[in-house]
Amino acid sequence: MSVHRERDMTVTGLLGRETHRTWNGTGNEQVSRTGVTLAGEERSYDADGSFTYDDVVVPIPGTVPRWPVSGTITRSLTVTITGPNGTHTKTVDVAITFDGDSTATAVVNGVSREIDLAAREGGFQLRQRRR
Image 1: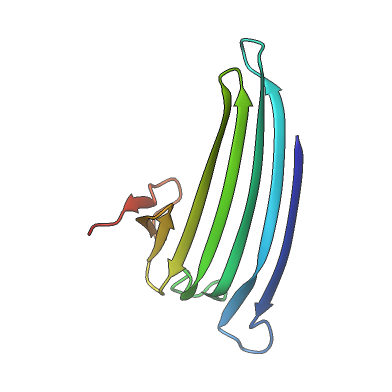
Image 2 (image 1 turned 60 degrees about the vertical axis):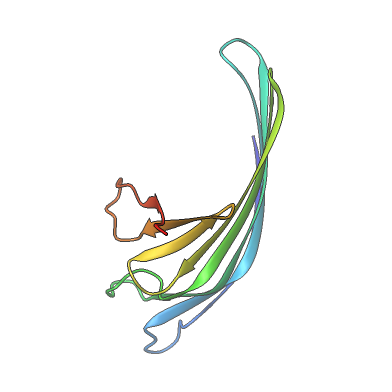
């Protein structure tokens, strides 16, 4: 397995009596993995991804509400799997927008979904948005 990740992030709101932090930045990653299936056939997995944080404003730890007040996170990931059935490539583009309430909007390859930021850990947080 090979993993390479880079991030260039800026956080503001760390001095004084700030009540929020603002995150901006970009990053990318490359992940490669090769293995053998139970049938003894080789399978490989290669992923290339990138992300951008654009003015993601979050309250300081310990405050309520605890979810982001505003901003957008975008993420793009291309995965190529090569195995006994050939090579398959899939690309996923995600944009998550925060507006200060307990839900965020995620647009995944053009399909809008709602993320329940208040869902307890292990709960189902992602659901299709109603029109």
